[in-house]
Image 1 (cartoon, rainbow, N blue to C red):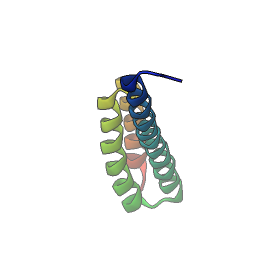
Image 2: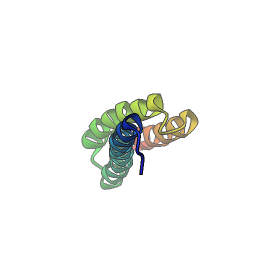
Image 3: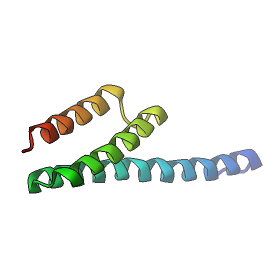
Length: 87
């Protein structure tokens, strides 16, 4: 446990940032799953809207350094191809 005032504040700031980062990563994972479920259900309109929302969240996570750039590109590419193949 820190004794110095600045260290105590740093602990609080780190905890808040960790919570925010965890929330963003969870949102990205959930959007990927729901987009994939919409694709398997055959709902192209819903899948497209979820995909657009997912792209913005993934790009935000990449800019914060939570997800690597190549991982994000791979995930977006795979889901994009699945949506394009839908009838």
